[in-house]
Every structure is written in C-alpha cells, then in structure tokens.
Amino acid sequence: MYVGALELDVLLGDVHSLKEKRSVVRPVVAELRKRFEVAVSEAGHLDLHRRSLIGVAAVAADSEHVREVLAACERLVAGRPELELLSARTRLVGPEDD
Image (cartoon, rainbow, N blue to C red; front, side, top):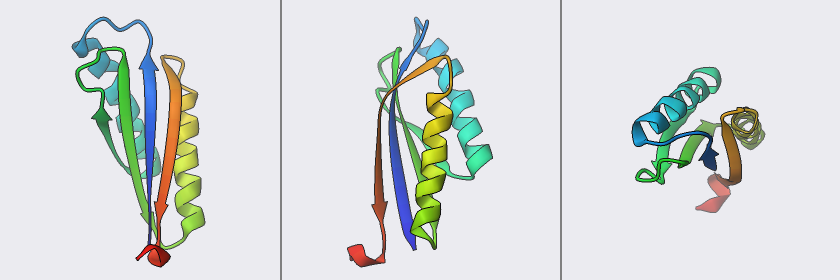
C-alpha cells in the first residue's frame, strides 16, 4: 500500500474576506474530490483571506498510480485562473518506509 500527500500553497485573486475565500476554495476542493476520488481539505492559512494551503491524500496499491493522481490534482489547481499556485510538495510513503 502506498500513501501520497500533496500540499498546494495557493494565492487567491481578488478576495477581500474569509467568506469570499471560502467561495473560491470550496469549489476547487469539491472538484478535486469528485474528479480524482481523493481526500482533500483546506489545511492551512485558515486566517489569511488571500492564501490557502490545500492538502490532498491518495492511497493505492501501486506507487505510480498515486504519483499520477497527485500530479493530475496539481495540474488542475495550477490551471485554475482564479488561483496562483505558489508551491506544491509531494510525499509518498510505501511498505519499504517501515
């Protein structure tokens, strides 16, 4: 079993409140969850209205599949015009990491 985690640090466009932030971040989180069947959450920068840290997790029997899914998630977020992807960090844990 392989577990992959992806941290996406994003800058939001014309957002002036936490309420507006939610209206931008929630659809992205929902789309990632629905399209790729991954666990997703806003996991950081919760008190900043123009920044968000989106966490994505995937589990599979094959490490390459986990990498592909997380890379596709990163591409989706990078392609959203209302967001600027500042950084992406991927971690993979497998059976050899015991």
